[in-house]
Length: 118
Image 1 (cartoon, rainbow, N blue to C red):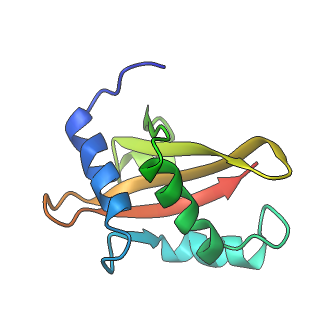
Image 2: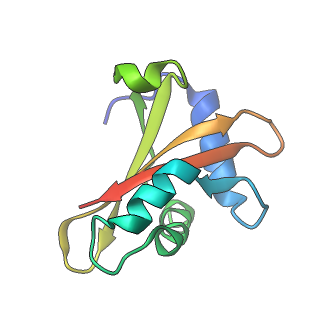
């Protein structure tokens, strides 16, 4: 696994996920949540059910991968995006969850969840 480019940002992401009980620290991007709710990529698994999965995964020592943003449609909003691959019953490759750092507040950072799939 390559070392993250921005350890400080990665730690803010980790902190935001751990602060899930604080409103606004771990939320779905509204547009993406509507899209995923209308057409869930995994039958009977909806965004609100997915929200807690990365929290437990990270709290149990799971790895958050930091990726340089190379998609032109997202580069104006962020330098990095993040993913976790969570073991999930019935999914051979696990559950992929994508998110990004929305607010860099050092006390209450915010992460926006944007996607999940096999």
